[in-house]
Length: 421
Length: 137
Image (spheres, rainbow over the protein chains, first blue to last red):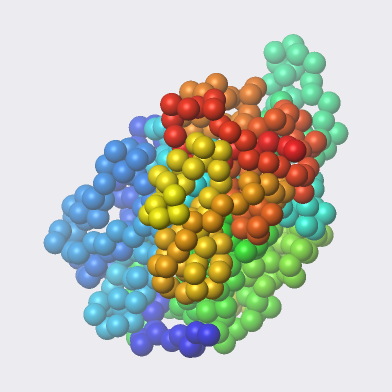
């Protein structure tokens, strides 16, 4: 049993910014981080002086592999003009910057720092698809790698176990994909900003312009079932089940709660924090649930004094479409074995009772892995502040939103609850 | 052999001999495959080698069309996927490995629960990977 956690001092988010996510051959991680930082400084309602930042916590998974450069803390501090501020890099695979966020919260809650910049970034597009698969697989266990597992393969295997246990099918994965694209099309920062039906229309038009007979898809699921349009990556995982290869950066500004009013009248408060570790594919008790997500969620709910029903919307780590289904169950939003039905019934749509991944999720917003944890929290921040534009959740009186991050095969999971007062 | 220190390299050497060996905690009797030299339940290191039957059932799998460069070097590609799998051994533990002897272009016909047996992996004898290879019984 864990004790109920609490912060020694309240912590609030008072600014947020991110680069567009996508594939940017001409831009470095530093370029992208500066863009995120610039947007963040502009987002602080009452303004702030960058030199007031006490320290930086930066999440990055494996730029060491992707662009053969490490020691990013000092590089970014110099680029931002913040020498000699201390910078600490965190690594937790795809949850890297979610860990940075937690460490920054603790640094402020301890009283040691007052104003901390939390960032995340990754630059993946310089590598071939095969190399990216190999680089991401660095987060897998050596046994998984030796068996040839890539992450699309790991989650493909998880999907076969889920299908076998609960009777779900590929069609249920398609529901996740279609919903993600409906949200992503409304996110100007997203890597993929077209709905599945818009992608279909564009391909039909392209075929016609080339004098080819147009594809005969009757609906989105026929498109997603067409192996030409949606090729297999690691069966049953297909291309449209996978988050893309992405470059991008994101950052938020955290301050001690009692200082927040001098930055903005609408800070978002850290209400619950959870983090846990899990076992890999062969050692896990259950392949249809991530124990670390369950543990992290319980810790955060207990700290916040909230239940899953209180969380009005969430960003969850949909690295693959099956993952979004599992997370909905592990976070307590839906009972085990019913997550796929919840998606099919539209419960997780933006206008449904439990909107999931209004940003478009990793699938459409993009997944520069080290940036993802912070970028998820930015979506929660924007929705709570009513600043999500066209994709704003229609429900009124948003108060509690949450973000779930996962590294590896559920090895590192976090759950963070933000509150608007 | 039972005095040999528990390690991944010894596990791989057993695999080369067609044996799937795990470790057993002398305290709680839990069996681990691949072997662990430290019992995560009892937090102690008095572990002994234990040989498994090498048979089990398919628990989960994926037919991987885009593998890492080193799998591509073996000739696997989008037209020739390979199958990576989680296998539940008769003795209880699960292992990850590769599944051969199935049609990876027809994954609908690879069935969860099908009986599998460890096979000698002589195709890549120059490259000792820590990877049990199974095929259908």
